[in-house]
Every structure is written in C-alpha cells, then in structure tokens.
Length: 279
Image (cartoon, helix red, strand yellow):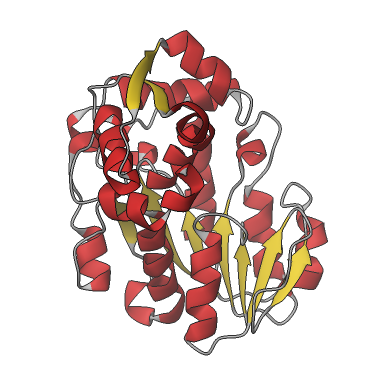
C-alpha cells in the first residue's frame, strides 16, 4: 500500500490516479474530508500532528510526502512526519521539496526544507527528492478574474521561468515510488521553456478563444494576495524568484525527460486541459 499526502491537490490527485491504474493499493490523505478515489481509500489527517497519521500509515510500504504551507511556518516540525513514517514501517519515501533548496539555499524556508531533505537522507529508508520550480497550476489564482473580467493580474509581467505542469510532477513521483532505479535520486523538475506571466495570459486567451488583458501588480499588491494562503516569508521567497530569477532558476532541467522518457508538457497544454476553470 502507498500513502499519498496532499491527495486532493494538483499533484496528489493525478498521482493517486496513476498509482491505482498501476495496480497499487492507495491511501489518499488530506486535512479535509473528500470522496475516496475510485479503487482506493481516503483518510483525514493533519500532517502538523504526525501521530495522527498512524492509521493511514499502518501497513504502508511507501509514502509520497507533500508539505503544506503551514508546515513551513515557525515552530512547525515537518521532519516528524518522516520519523513517524519510518516508525510505522514505511520503506520508501518520495519527498516533494523545492528547486529553491538548490538555487537559493540561504532563504529561511529553503534552509528548513533542506533540513527535511537531510532527515530523509539519514533515515533508514529508500528515498527520492523532487525539486520542482513554479507550478503551472498557480495560474488558477487568476481563474476568477479571467472568468469575471477577462483579466490576469500578476507581478513581473515580462519576467519568466520554466514552470512545470503538476501532471509531470505526479508522473515522476509515481516512477520514483514504483521503480528502484530512482532510489537516491534528486530531480529538478521544470517545464520545457521559459514563459512569462504575460505569455501565460496569452496561452489562456488562446485556449479560451477570447482576449485576456494583462494587468501588472506591484510586488506589495502581489504579496498581500499571496499572504492570504501562505506564510509571508514564503511569499517573499517566491516573489524574489519570480522577480529576479537567477541562471539556475532559468535553466530548463532534463530530469522530466530523464525519468519519463519524454519532454515535459508546455504551459499551453496545461491551460488547454484546465480551461474550464477560466470559462
């Protein structure tokens, strides 16, 4: 049995589906009640209280660990989730980390994530670490404004990074959970091209078949919006990358191709598959 945390999210949902289609028994974990995935089971648990994961982890051979935003807050101890999993007999853990651990190692949230990676490396389990850059699904922040006003509002309109499709992250995670060849792998996950927020707006407009206007936010305006769903420090770290990506953050990684044997999906493909959210 494989446990997937964050199972109702943009990575967890396709990962759960992929594992079930591969014939695995899956326990989908989230903080809130949700329907059980077809062919699997759902358990409500809060990763901020790792002991509460014990029922979900019972009998599990592997764990996909996605750390929600509150586990990056001061005083949180996400490494305890790894320790709980090891104590429960889990033998393989795939951790969803961040590209910033390598590209900006001295930010507070990156230091905390690196510490979690180190705990995983030192544990007595098989492991793999996934380090994605920005997610294509972050464009869903714009869904309401596109539906109501045909507007995308974002900072740094002409500064791009190679954002990654969450479906690619899910497929790489499934490969790491199922294939021994990926044990000890650390994978940087990006899309196939650098794309700006203005370019994302154009891709959404193309998928809609309707013009979409781009409105550039100030950094302060963007932070105020982001801070409603993540710690302010994490919002600042994210904005630092979006506003002034360094050469490593602009690099298109070969790792999706290396693991999956195909190129990563472009943002335009993500927009076309998810266009119902913007109609």
